[in-house]
Length: 414
Image (cartoon, rainbow, N blue to C red; front, side, top):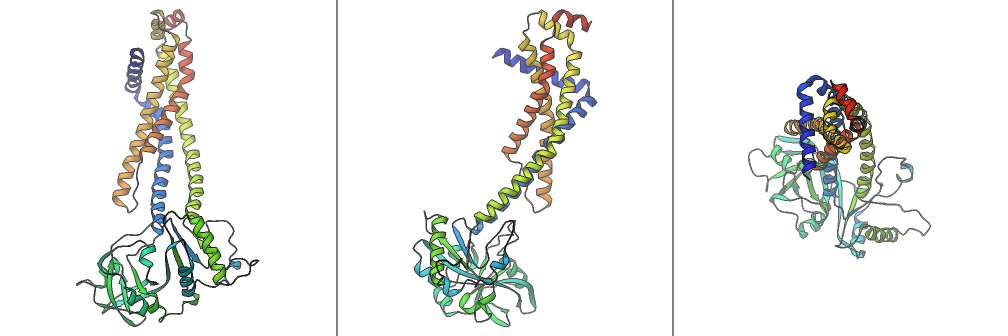
């Protein structure tokens, strides 16, 4: 143990002495490691942060929620749209039948959206997502109310002209007071605001409740024709019910509801967020590979730089190696001494690369809306890769140093 600590200490001192004595040469040689670690870890940092944001956005859609729609979701590849365009849209009748017949669904809701201008007195906001939703929408879609309340069962059934609005829309329209109890105008109709959704911000896909308007579907359908509007039935599974089990049940129910023949192809799609997750998983694998290729060239150059430093170091310290061997130093002692030195030099280059990434993450997170995080996993990866490059680069110089004849080494150094 004492010998190992002595080896580490001497190697550490020799590595720093190399930097101090030959500053320019060492810095230029370590630059390859620094750039390589920067390239690899910065790519992983950016895409880990993107992946975290995407997964949070996907999670907000619900991992135990299925979506019955006309169009199937797709993440790349061929998309035979001509097979789907004549399918009927999901309807309120479909929703009611699913709600009535399903044994595995905890909640079922209907939703449909159209973009409209929303007005209040002299203020107006254009291109707002106005959604018609059924009573149980709040049970399948996550949101909280900062003010007011949700629709009552009676209000939803009666189709009252009431609305729940997003936080940004409330701020834009009602700059002088509380929006609850006041009337906004949509479709040329007066609609009373009964609730305001807590501010959320946009997710990775640009979705947000901050500028949304929710209306009871029984009121919404008096304003627009639902038949060709891209409607969705949202089904949330009961606890301990898997998506696969729920999907199988919903497939059978929808085929029965629409009276499809056994040989007929489904005329509906059952979508889930897992499709999006898998699509992004394959994308990130490709990007990670690109990151390794880009960084790999820099790491290769850096490895040659470390090897160059170590060959020079062996040459400059040949007489010291001879003296150490003459005093009884074993070959493995010399070998480990130079290997540790190579690893320390490589780690220094890698740490500088990580410090640059850390500085950039702080700057990007401070001055943009994109939140970058240098994770512990990426830090350990950067340090580990640096150590491995140093170890590989130092093997040949260290081995050549360990095999020097002590007499010849002392003579060469004179």
